[in-house]
Image 1 (cartoon, rainbow, N blue to C red):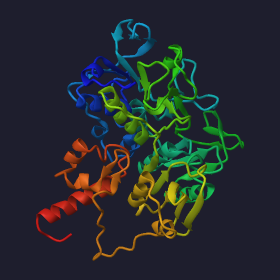
Image 2 (cartoon, rainbow, N blue to C red):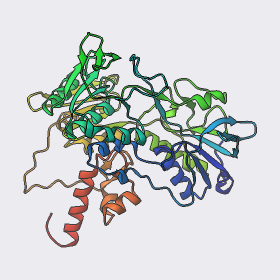
Image 3 (cartoon, rainbow, N blue to C red):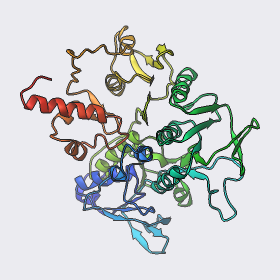
Length: 467
């Protein structure tokens, strides 16, 4: 049963992991009056991994990555947890010291998996000199330092991260090639039709795309594909593959399948141990995206500080963050069952598809035109029952003239990562206040243009000038 006394619930809470989910959890726990210790094995304070590709591209500086924690949080960096002693309720650190807990939260995230490419790893266990992973801040810094001395790059993996990195390197002036083993790009998120449009957009932006081809070997000449073709390149960037980090939980004897299994209170098979984010598995699903991790963190913070909560799973919204590429995916459009409403214009490079069941949007894909993403996301999140013609109308682009400004209602969701409405943004006086009080723009950053627009129209109203 959830605790009922906030002071009792606020005893020693220890969080293993110092990523985005842990940062959100720690803030929520402090808000609820709890004491919390965060143990992170990286040298950096919690940072926004979603914006790493934007830093590589040069549209954001490294300072934009920082996720500030409250002063009340006991943050211990460079601290690796090696064992969980469940009977004693202690975690053991690499230096053999121990940290006691009353409630333990595993927020260990996911770890990249290396593709089966011969020559990736040198004799000393390090990656071959021209090979770069792209998962952490250190990875980003290493790749960023290598870019000025390179002319060409091959990105292995055509998922969301791969396309973001490929676009960032293109913007930096490199000739970029993308290798994807599936038959189309973003194969886990979109259908073949959308994948073809995305590939065409990338080619238009200067990248070369190879689908249905796998990298098998690295040589002095370059990256060898399974069709025998060799891509000569200065850099190879690995973005394909990742899995929940479950080794610590598995050694402790917790129930682990694909991820660490949790119930509706995000509790593991041990009543004193919880898990959130990429490492957690709820209802047979592992999320892999920031909005679900943040929702889990917020709910668990409330639970650990005395509230009764139940997590029912999250409707995920994924955005591709890359200059010149506009993609949004709601839910799992490849597997969702329902009636399909689709509008495609390959000439202009747009593809919009909704899956509707019982009048409700259960999944969707938007490529090339995100003008209605705010309204569509709002209906998706709320489970709005739509009329017969509404799904089709939602897929038609807005026709807006200079005399017809866009006015979002206060309850329209602007930031899907943090669940922030237009009204909450209008209540703020500056972008810094928006970030501090609502956390909008601190996730994927896709809401930044809308937030800036809302702030500018607010200023115009205050000054007495028309919108």
